[in-house]
Image 1 (cartoon, protein in one colour):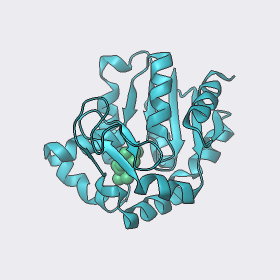
Image 2: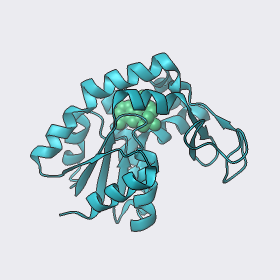
Image 3: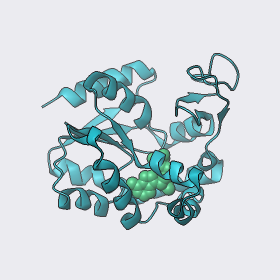
Amino acid sequence: MKLILLGAPGAGKGTHGAAIRDQYHLPIISTGDLIRKAIQSGTDLGEKVKSYVSAGQLVPDEIVINILKERLQQPDCQDGYILDGFPRTIAQARALEEMGIVIDRVIDLEVDDQSIVERLSGRLVCSACGASYHTKYSPPKEPNLCDNCKKPLSRRQDDEPATILERLRVYHEQTEPLKDYYEAQGKLRRVIGQEQVQDTTRLVLAAVASE
Ligand code: AMP
């Protein structure tokens, strides 16, 4: 099965993607994670893309399509995957089709802008395992330490207030049109974010299993 998780930054793609992964044993392919890794390792690619990420802009299609193509060649992608954060433009969606990839379902996580700002401005992440916390809604057991690996937590650089607003603007302008694109193909499943994470997860898993 090949799935796409669509939704604004902070809509919960990582959290609900993990629930799908655990149930279906599919790898999560996050272009954001691949890009952050390239930046952290200081590769040429990382140097090329870091100014886009820190400004809250999208990395140019050609670059991110190549990053994804390379990742999908790994053996763990043979039986399917969950795409988290790709595609983010119509051109990227077309690139998937040109690669001969047939997507089964697109799960669209709907969360209003005000909640997104609140979620992202309190988000803390573990740079070791990628686990995500929120200072108010899901704090770690020990202040600033990851529950899983006990490494210090930090804020993503692009979770600064001005950058959050820019990422949201870019989402509405460039990524949201993908909803109509996949709706027209009969693949879109809308999930409205609920107050309790587990309630949203239940709806997401039902949407994945739906016809
Ligand atoms: P994310 O972790 O998915 O929020 O991605 C973090 C940042 O990486 C984004 O704000 C973009 O700058 C960049 N990025 C990730 N995925 C893509 C994509 N599919 N297209 C363009 N830029 C991307």
